[in-house]
Image 1 (tube, rainbow, N blue to C red):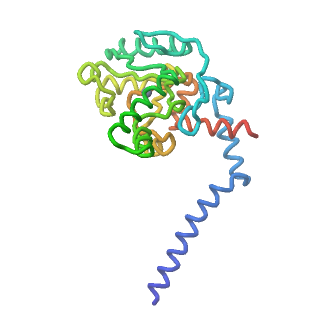
Image 2: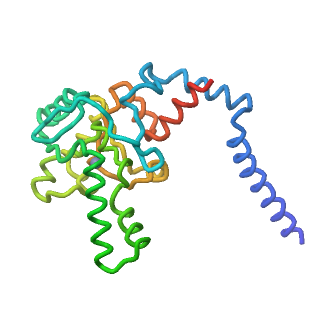
Image 3: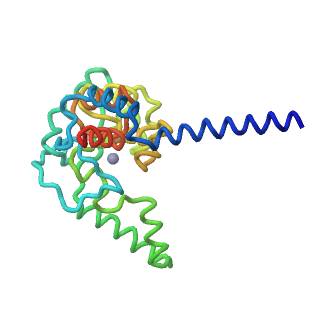
Amino acid sequence: MKNKGMLAIGIGLVVLFVGGCVAAYSLGATKPQDQVKTKHAAQLPKSATPDNSNLILVNKKHPLKHELGFKQAEMNGITISQTIQQPLENFMNGAKAAGYPATLVSGYRSKAYQEQVFNQNYEQNLSQGMSHDEALKATKGVIQTPGSSEHETGLAVDVMTNQYWDKYHNLEAKSDQTAGQKWLIKHAPEYGFVLRYVKRPEGRKSTGIDYESWHFRYVGVENAKYMTKHHLTLEQYDQMIKDQHQN
Ligand SMILES: [Zn+2]
């Protein structure tokens, strides 16, 4: 009886503790929370503003409604936004100078192109005997819905070290085991890029996308360094910026 009593008290304390956390978390307007928020917000870089076009958030929950009108540039036959031309060139040159030449595999994809790829896959599923719902579900599992691919911004690139690319010609997570890809991931922020879809457990939960050791997104040097230092995904960073500017 005594043991059961102790157990009950123990469980009660655990529930109280967990409950306390949830309550503290959900009560965004309490004073200590506000103080934490302000303190954190004050540390945000100057360029971390809602109107900074380098910080545009594109994902399934925030799809582009139309094509973004930006100046395009070309690198090795691949289209990118002119905004990232110089930073990307510096990034690739930096890697090369360090002994790790890399390949720019993919850059800008238009919404129309994304639509075409999406529809082709869907039609293929239909022709294999799937119903409309089944085909759509299967396609969505492997291809970003048109409008929700970050490549449509021109600010995202797939870059892979030649150590891996020359051998496998495939974008695979395990490329991060090569010294070259390690270099790219480590030094990207110095050139204004972040590894967008991180390996950390909160990565997938926050971005909705599995780890991609090759997908880099330009956000500017200040923001890239800050996000990397504080282990923030763009989704989390975007929320912090919005919170700060609401006050
Ligand atoms: Zn990509």
